[in-house]
Amino acid sequence: MIAWIDDALFSEGKSRTVDLVALLRAAVVGEHALAVTDKKGREGEAPHRDRWVGGLHGKLQHEVKALLEAAKSVDAGVSAHGSFAILVSADWRGRPTDVVVELKDAVRLLQTPLAIVVEHGVNDAMFLLRVLPPDWRKTFLDWLARGLVVFEHGGGAGTMARLVDHHAGKGEPRLSGLEPRAWQGRHFVVGDRDAPPGHLGDNARTLERAFRRVQVAGSTRVCFLERRKQENYLPRQAVEAYVSSRITAKEDREKLLAEVATHFESQERHWSELPCLGGNASFYKLAFAEESQRWSDAWFEADGSRDEFQRLAESINAAR
Image 1 (cartoon, rainbow, N blue to C red):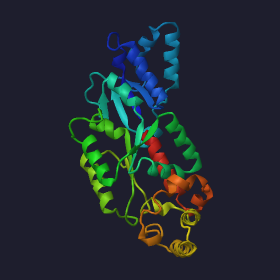
Image 2: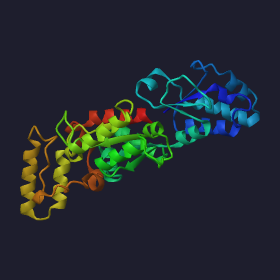
Image 3: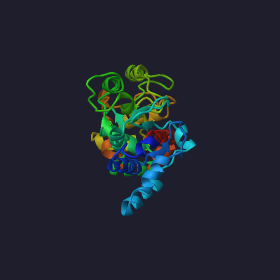
Image 4: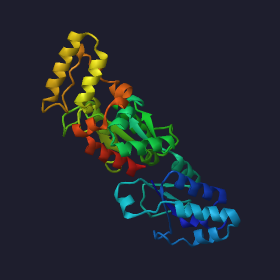
């Protein structure tokens, strides 16, 4: 997230020192980009901030300077990747921005982790962590451990669409406590495509229409998987290992493994249903949650999905 701070907030008597320090600390801890601007939108023109820092004493001044030095700066790369921006001001007119918030609300917003909304808060989270490139997986686990991102249970595309309609639209009361644009800025939705490439299934279209209704800025707030659904990202070796561990009857196991082999030889394998015993469509649902930690990263590399999830990781990083 980018936090633009109105320099006037640092003028004498305008804000409490404890609130300003809390704002700076929240920006640094949350790894948000920070810039002070004047009424003409000029970054770096901050006479009020400079006088405020100069008027602090001893250890407090030292720590505030350290926070200002530690804060990420706003550069062209940050702005170009669709980062959500807020303007922190008590009285601002004329500067277009994603959302204008007062000081106390800005502190809370900067402390709010980015919520990655998925259909199932455990199974889908385990799926995403498994298919991410190893370096990004390590980064996401670090973010989760530090509370910078969380996975949020969406409950299916229809329910996710309802969440978007209410929280990012005009739903009352404000159940999240965040204004619509602020809610948008702290949520990133990942959903199944449920259709061949270039198309969206009925559930995915319902979710896409919800985003269009609330005019969520840019395309980086929602991402549909390129393949039909999560099961289509299971590498052949993983499917064979899963079938072998789950089907105890030799005849059934060998029959299903033969069907799996045929499936993976097909050009349609990324958007056709995986073969399963007795038509049980939910057979593979728990595969990522229960067994994926034993699978090799090389399997996923060979399966060809790495570039897709590299892009997804970069989009989520930009959205933070």
